[in-house]
Image 1 (cartoon, one colour):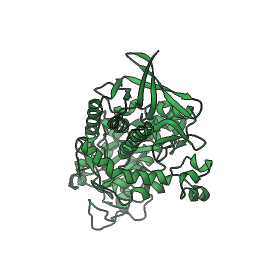
Image 2 (cartoon, rainbow, N blue to C red):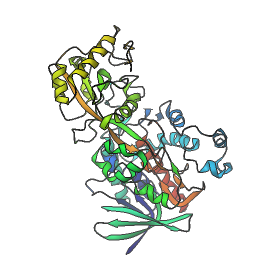
Image 3 (tube, one colour):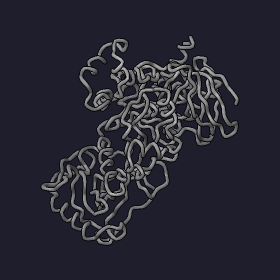
Image 4 (cartoon, rainbow, N blue to C red):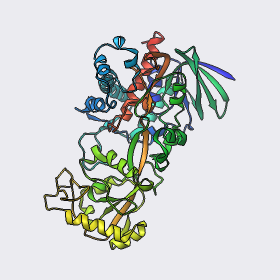
Length: 484
């Protein structure tokens, strides 16, 4: 078995791993990057994402950035433990240090580090702008990298290569190597070309969540996870080994293991992220032809995940959005439809129901009841207008226009699994914490391998999480080696 020695070994070649690799290499570390994919497909999910960033300017996060994360950092937390976190970490009890919730100090560090990380990315060739998004209505602005996540991947990978980092493609991590229970000395990996390899050095786990692992999904999310699908082909590479191998050596878990980031997609499509965000302008029906949720409780960017979770709970995890021709009057409505598959059309509701495999009687009754509950108001499709139903359960809170102008249109929608919420607990330096609340020497994590979310995803923070904590990890290893 060949053994290779580096200062820093990074598992994963998405934005999280590459940030660690570049930050370390810029400080003189000898860096290895292990990537399950080929060079052409490197980057995992990062390569496919548009990489929305929750920022109101190039140098400022949104006003609610740390507040939202703090409010979704864990459920029903013990107030005594919360009070402890107001002091320095060194004064916390072992129980508090190892809690599965997210530390406020980690959230504040995250927010504080974003502006500097964006400037660092600009210095490394990434450009940013406020570009159009798929959200026709939104609460928060979104800064985007020009060229999406692929642009970040290629810029950072090229930079890492120019700094001498060595890339090992079609190579997957299998086991952390330890010295006792408190120190990691490297990682054992399997390479298609070289077979078993041992990489010695500090390790950064940046291999994503477990959305590509059906066994872990069933174990943590339950049997209904068979109705989920990764949001893009890159996600199938994320099989959870980085999380599992750390848990196996005593790492503390964090984040909501039984949950994930949900996005509404068209199951007929094989393209990356074939999202359907047009449902606020119609109604959603399940296999029984019945409505089951408020389709428009607020702006689509703030509420789509919660609506999508309701779709996931329906029989076989599927629903259909029913629209009429008035949707075409919504300015730029096509931005909200990313699927490459056409709408299913019917001249009448009965014809549409037949094409969808639904009961025509049930669908007609649902639409008739909805139409009767619609009330006049000032319809404003690009802002919350309060045009709502009356006396209907569940209600529709905005954009409630009757569906009476055929031909009628429909898109099937399922919940995509963008990424899983459960991961590893880290401190302010991206160092992995063990179950006793202490850092594991030489072990760091970034990206979706870090557990940060509970309940509802803070939109536009996942790519930032990978960038920030990856950079922090690379810098921390350099400091450990006496390099600045």
